[in-house]
Length: 409
Image (cartoon, rainbow, N blue to C red):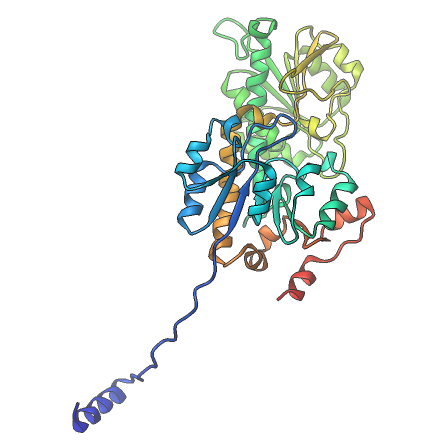
């Protein structure tokens, strides 16, 4: 180009206020590959799996590597072939899976055998199951120098706990359907249809607790035509429940006399109380249960925290019920495993976005630094306990998580 032409272009650029820019420097792409392991649940008859084949396909398409233990999805009718078609690699033992993976995504708390094969720096995503948690478990995880994230503590942008809410929805819906089964003749019940029919009075359902479980139990029972009565000591929760249901139903504080009267006349009682710390308080005494109808059904969803019926004892999916005073008791802690495919999809839909975002950030650690809601789920970081409640409960020293993260910048 001639010198005169260059000068003219410079004048034109100056007149319109355009300043020539340097060519942008090449930015080094982040290393975003995550190596994820999906073990087979090995405790308490758990049938769910933490990642579905659809989620695995998404993760692999974004450049991540996923190992799935052989048979991990069979309880939810997902098979090894489904996972390999989605791009996963099959590991034939938990030892192989833990050895090859950096991020372990589980549906049950880690067992002793699984903790033995963990490696320093691994990230463990699993339920905490606070009522059954022991100090030795926390200490062993700390000794392995791993980072642990509890599903129960994960928050979303609205400040709610998505995993707790989702599992509560499943348990609430399922509890009413289970009650309907045990009222029928299929399980030697009274032969009663939960909602009744024209000319036949509907059954009565008493629900203890107006939280997520109680709300969805009420929704399902009302949808089936039952008469629903809800008890809770939190008046705000009772008001919110009526607002969410968009109708006025019978609600009451947990007055023993009122509760006793309603229990004597009901066909189904559902325990849906939740305690933030420790055991759920017993609200229905053995004497109250003894006055209930013969053939009535108790579904104690609170059993994973000890139960809110004095007569409740933990049962399993193999033998889910027992009778006491002629009342059928269903006290299986992991009700969501009864509908394992739905439960697996619910868990996977919450975990997968975290993994995808972590991949985009170049690693889960970077993502945790930037996302306070997901960071809330951490209770151990590189072997250091970071949850104050667990520290106070078990007498273990804890360290503020933000200080630990800042020290690792």
